[in-house]
Amino acid sequence: MSQIIVAQNSNGIVLAAENRAVQLDERGQEISLQVDRLFPLTSHTALLTAGAPEGVDMGHALKHFLEGEELTDVQDIYGAALAFLSTEYERFMRKKCELLPIDPIHQVSFILAGKTAKDPAMPFRLHFLWTKKKLPRLDGDEISFAFSLPRRMGLEFQINKICREKASLDEIVEKVTEGMKRLKDREEVRSPIVYAVISAEGYQSVNP
Image 1 (cartoon, one colour):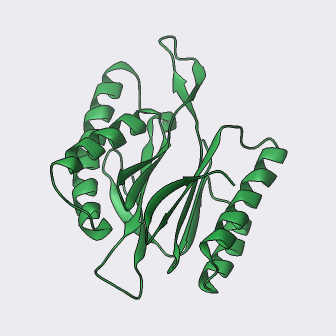
Image 2: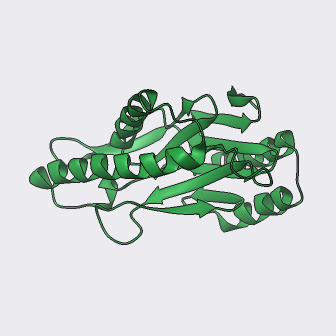
């Protein structure tokens, strides 16, 4: 599974993703692909996909859907995204199960990130959309400060600590980047790795 790391506090959100995926070919053999897992949905929201590469297509379909809905607040987008992506994922799983038995490689999850005007004390939010109960149903959980997938509990603890201490966005980017570099040095992740932030000014790709 490709690595993702996210973090947020009142100063903004940091997103990082390993743009790699594994897919089965027509003979059932695993092949490695490069995919764009991280992209903006609106000026102040973004989506990060984990798992099967088809999640990227679902995410772009969501972006197209949102263009006609005129939603900007991440809390409003969350409800629409959960319903839309649940339908897309169920359709994907039905199609896959016609050809192959259910396999963990087919699982997809998403992280929705963005700014809200509904709570000035917590202006940035992260939502994890995943198969919490059973396939192919998606459920959602809110992420407090830091989260990684696959889980890296030591790194999450470090990032969680500085986020609680109201670290600046630059400091959080530095900590996330250091974590990814250590994983890369251990050959647990591979390039390309992409980074982005969401601040009061909006979504921005970064190259630490």
